[in-house]
Image (cartoon, rainbow, N blue to C red; front, side, top):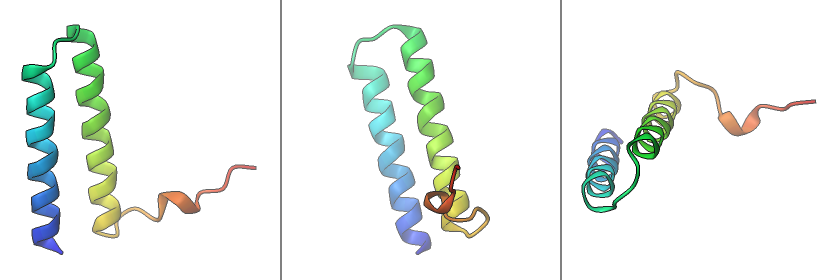
Length: 61
């Protein structure tokens, strides 16, 4: 499990680096994209380690 997490982090990091360096876009859009990816990865890590309950089980009435 730990190796899978490390591989996913490396792949996400490389993809984010490629997007930041090779796809021309405004700086503000890059900042928002980076923030969204970092938040998503943090939530995914918390869920993977069991520190965060299943996000899909949250019900809003």
